Image (cartoon, rainbow, N blue to C red; front, side, top):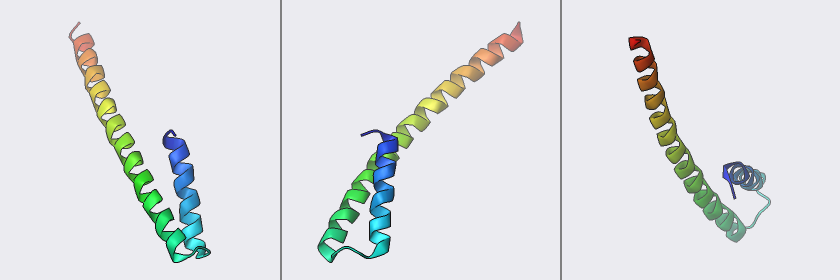
Length: 69
């Protein structure tokens, strides 16, 4: 699954839990699944944030180099 699919699944889980239409056992399983999905989403965001920071720094270096000309 990709980030968007995880996000959709997480929203489905939240809706089910908010409706209180699930048993305690099913609610617990859904909650556990939601926590695992949230962890994966957090890691994806963290990884991509790092990539964006690196790209931004590279762009700033190029911009500074171009300003020197």
